Structures are given as structure tokens and as C-alpha cells.
Length: 294
Image 1 (cartoon, one colour):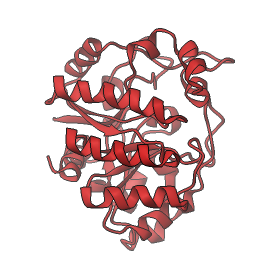
Image 2 (spheres, one colour):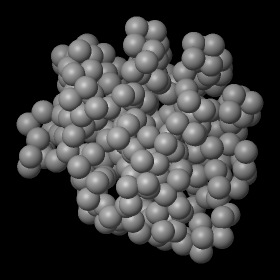
Image 3 (cartoon, one colour):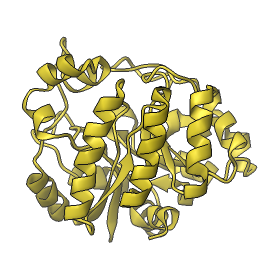
């Protein structure tokens, strides 16, 4: 069965070699809290590109979508974007990339969007307004939306479940903001990461009524957050065509089983969700193909 992972992150060699030192130098304190928390073991893996490709091959993952990080500084976005540009140039059949943006930075954000469009990036994200010190109602974000709307590429947004337990880097995200955003830009597709913080389960009537046809939900970090059965619950509300497979690789989402990152356990987790074989095909690859126009 074909597999496309719609949500992974990769970092430069300098970031991987000394994440704490790099974060201090670049003042990326939220990223440091996520990848190298000071008071608990880190779940972050640091594979090379070659190891990532081997892990993909081992799990029969044909392509991955590189999500940018929600950096606090625009210079960090540029570093990751240049790294991703190199990867999609070297491995166009294996890697696609979303452009990392820092919306409050103004002109440099507009330049990054145009640059990414020209280089063949496939979308925008992962965006985390609260971590990046803006809101989805701010003028800086409205300018971003006006710039990307003609592009037709999806935007991935981080969403935090308000009822999830505390974890490194957790910052609350008002769920109503995402619904308002989807209504304000009905022609724009949005991917809400981490099953959208269970948004369809909290607002089931709106989704059953087809009010948000432009919202999609990825499974990134699902094993750390929920039991696999939640996918069936959400699929019954949104339809299985709205769910995208994603792992958050190289995050080790099975800390009791994983010594190193990988894709296979996440695929197995998904296969135990109760979805039918036809629906699994949509979630594992069909939906992201259709959304991206591949």
C-alpha cells in the first residue's frame, strides 16, 4: 500500500550536532524546549539525510513532506528554508517541502513566500501563531494570506489539544481561531496538525454540516497523544478523505519501543485504528496526493 508522510521535520547538521548551543546562539528557546528539554529525556532524533531515506525505504514510504518549524526568528526560517531547498533539488522524487515563515517579520516573509513558490515548495508551515508571537487575526497574517491565496498551496498550522497533558513546548492555541480562519478564507486549504487538537470532536455539528470543507487533519505525533481509535471517531464526522498520514519524524513517538526514529510503528498504529482498507489507502497516500495535486 503506498505511503506518503505529510508531516516530518529535518534539521541542519549544525542544529543536530549541538541543539542547545544552536538554540542559545539563535535565541530559539521554544525549539530548544521541544528538542532538548532540560528536565526530562528528549524524544527528538537526529538522523542524517541518508538515514532518513533508509528509514523511508524500510517502511515503504515513497515521499515525505518536510514541514518547517515555527521559528521565533526570521533568520532561522531562512536557514531551514535553504536547507529544504537543497533537499528537494537533490531528491525531487522523495522530498517535498513547506516554507517556514515568521509572519511578524514583514517584508522578509513576503520575499520568502515568492522565493518558495519559484523553487517548487509545496505549501506553507508549520505555523504556530502563539509560539511566533502573533494571532491569526493580526494584520501581518492577513498579508501572508493575501500573498499565498493565489498560489493555491495548503497551509499547515500547529494545533494544541486544550485537554492534552503538559509536555515540552506546549503552548495553548485557541481552537476557535482556526474555525474563523477557515471561514474567512474559504478557497484556501488548511492542514491542522496533530488531528487539529480534536477539533472535529469538539465541534461535531459544524463538520457534519460541511461547514469547513477546506480543513484537513494530519496524524503527526498521534501515538503520543491519543489511542488509535480516535481516527475512526474523527473520520465518522469529517469523512476519511480529510485525514492525512503524518508522523512528526524524527520524533520518537513510541518512547517505550523506539531507540531510534522510524516510520513503521506509526503505520502499524494507523492500521489498528479500525479504518477500512479503502479508507486506509486514502489516509496513507490518496488524500495528500489529491490535496497537493500530485
